[in-house]
Image (cartoon, rainbow, N blue to C red):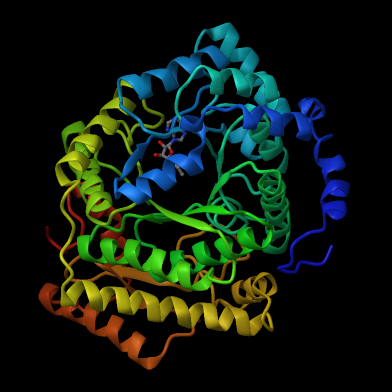
Length: 482
Ligand code: 8ZB
């Protein structure tokens, strides 16, 4: 099948759908007409797009954790706890790694073992194996909207089952769930597979059902320059809108410098509005991810990292924030630790709800820079695709015009080197083949030279290494001898 950014005909979608629903026995329980009926009867408080629209309107930042375990009753208990004890506004179901790899046999074994052991032997909720009815049990036990959070290159069957199961939001995208997650899956393949997911959601929308879509913003973590993640987010937003998706939440992961992070959140929304202007009735919202890098082992220090993310989300007026927990350095958190991350976040958000970062020259300069860079990247993507953003994206990755630092994918050039400047903002030490103007390149060079000067060293690869390890030593910027 040829990849083009063009809305799929219903016939083409339905032809592929027959194969998708046969990938695992639970696929046969998906009945689209009946699922429409089910969604029509969902209480409004469980519709993600409605909750997000309300939050955007009222300028509040909602909080959402990550969470998922193997068995249905335990999963419900976990989510109830996070809602009641953690005051989560929005709920997730984090999917286990086997399901993310489409390995439903191993997921089944994990479910069995979990039953035998009396504890979760999977690192998430295996929604495909549990099937439509079980997903609905989860939805019906709760009073908040549910989102699927995963990391799946081919997420077609998972989407069919969870959406028929009453989930109203689906994370991921053909780039953001490929480049950071897979080594050998081609970009063309994941873009096609995610066109299917977007077309499915477009089909729901055509039938009056609002399903929200959320590209995974942070990609590989805390050293991704905002213009790189923004380019990916906007491309995924455009691809989704073309297939008929109407409710889109674009994401950005905390880098750590307050001004840059707020500038990133504001510019993301402004750029997206510009790029998606041709699509009617699209509701755009934003999500901010608390620190997606290494965490301090010490729980008190971890709360410091969490609170700084909460403050940034609130001051940047993100529509929602995905929280971390004091167990981040250890692995999957207990429900108590998860609720603590939520409560500390809510505390900071409540205290900052009436404040915003005052517009100032520095903020404007950062926004302007991020916008210029993103436009330079996206202009070249369109050019490479002769106007087709899907084809342009494949070629842009080949050419290193789109390039994500520290990504495992062999389809990613990997020429970029980011490093922090003297204020901790993320800059390009090496911009690889990104199509930047001289002005942009010099801006970054100057920022890194200024850091080099205050540290008495030339900007070099050691800075990158130092920055990666800095947080473990309780710092943002990796200084020599600190
Ligand atoms: C890319 C996302 C990584 C983050 C968290 C990790 C990390 C993964 C679960 C989970 C609670 C789970 N994460 N799986 N948190 N329950 N089943 O996602 O700790 O922060």
